[in-house]
Length: 624
Image: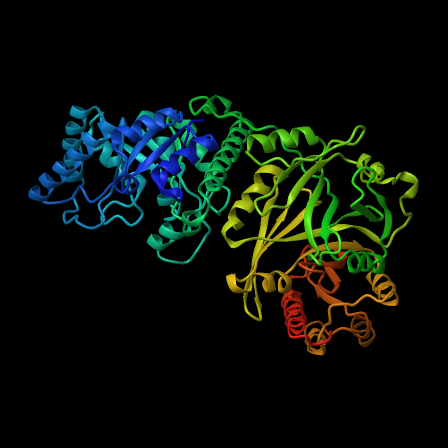
């Protein structure tokens, strides 16, 4: 599939945008007029630079407020258009984007629109260029792609076609079925944008909240299936207006954009072949990525710390035991309990906060997972390996977390554990801790959507819910991502943004590892006997709990005694407790009873408030 990106998607100068698009692997770019206007380089220099980088210049855009005007105004518009056609010849671009009129149209007449487009087509023929007419969702008289198509057909000029933009189609709720009714040769250009579903005016939604495919709520796979059936064979381009993208590092955004197109290409190819329509994929030259198998669980979590003593103390209190030290990297040790493995990287007595650094995910084919990650341009993790040590394939997630792909060995010691001296004989029989329920990873706000796409495209995780929770100094946003078989659950959260309190916020709104048990009361009592400092739960919480659920006095007393929190729904119950914060993380222990599928979201405000109080008190020197 030929890929392109509008320069308006990226930060920086035009020269920097071209370099980033080429480095990411795009085939071409759309030149946004303002980027050219403010550039010190001539059109000829831009043309040569693109050619040197291996980029095609696919579209010049936008041309606004053209049709539906009186003759005198139209003559002025034609003169303006002719100047842009001459500029396009200098750039070597053969297609211009013409947006439906928003500001100056005074005559609502399809016949006039078509006649004026026809005259524009005659002018375009003199310059050997084409016009792609696009219905803006807020166009004054034309805001529907089917309406724009009818005007193009009425114009009847070979130099006049249509541009399809998914935002303008899907933001209005238009069905994409009618895309198939457009002849492929009359589709001159295709622009893709995803977006979260928001209740706001369309123009503001468009200007600030578009995201790359796979990062929003639009059904772009369905659109692409319809497009493939038309026989369209041109570029598939990204046109994203997003405040975060305009601030982000240009190379990183470009990679994120190409990853989104490759993921969408793969999903479209698979959807067409599943429907027995593989032939339709040929015009767009769609190709699949290596098959991604559902992950089978979290193999290990790695944390690093400059406070080793307090970290291993909490693990011991929760029932973990030291498995051993790595034979060639003695700064690493592993703590185990049943199938749960926690690798600790000791940073020495530096006082550096404890935090999550890596996840190991069990997958049937680690090599295939790594190959897919490579094609999606995930940055590989360099890992020194001594002779005889297991090769673990890993890549960096956008937030810097290392994600490793390990083989399936849920009932036995995985091969890498032997490097710590752990064998099958060392596995604990009938442990109280039985697995990893979920992992919560904190995200920088500007990379939140990028991280969602990363886990969607690499591991086929799906976004199941979004929530926002009040905290003492702002809202916490969460997305819950799960594998189809529900063996891997990730919670991605964004804390309130405050550059002046970055370190404080990291401690007040920490990440966490949630481990499962079949007997949370036994785990809590064992931990308390070993001196675990639980995150305190206020009495007001238990009063509210009793009012909500009408619990028996004995059960409520048991919850109070063990600092347990509780929730239930029609399918089951959920009991859990939290440790105190270790640097920028903590550990949660959960017990699911029945078919409860949530993760304790109703209790999140209690936890956030308690963690805030603890960190604020520590900052003020108040004893815990």
